[in-house]
Image (cartoon, rainbow, N blue to C red; front, side, top):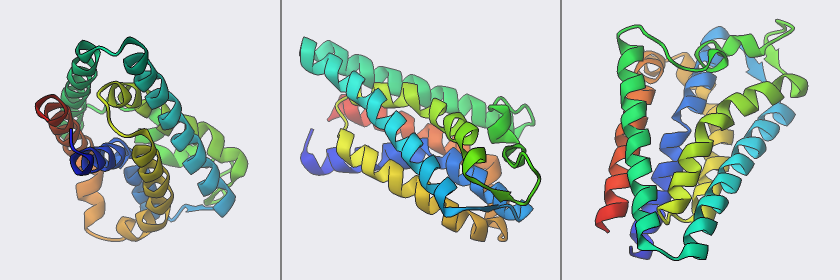
Length: 199
């Protein structure tokens, strides 16, 4: 797999796997719930750390065993996760939400109903957002995607999602993002898995 293709697939993987993060903060924007800078930083760091650790172990298995079969396995798992996201997205579109409760109802993270997510409230939300990425990160690492590029884009996308999410929350894009994010994410992840096999 060429360096440019590897960079593109790694960046796309980070963005597509974190579309639920953008959706959460779009919801915050719609509810006029603000997020403090320390809370935003903690959420970004925990999500990034989870991605790095899961990719590291996936990549470690490949390097230790050095088998093309495991690289294929990682790509196939990526495709499977993509299909699962697509199914979840379709279920959300027809009204059967299968997401984690804090993600499907992100305003629940505002425990004191202050209209702002503070540092202490960011921890459970961070883990709710991160747990979705662990399996995907391990599969991406196993498929040979670049750990550092994926990790960097995970941090940047997560952090800036909190800034642009509020703006989207007040626009017509809020409905589209809320309803179709999982479906779009699944399609992208499925294509990344296919590309990892082909290239």
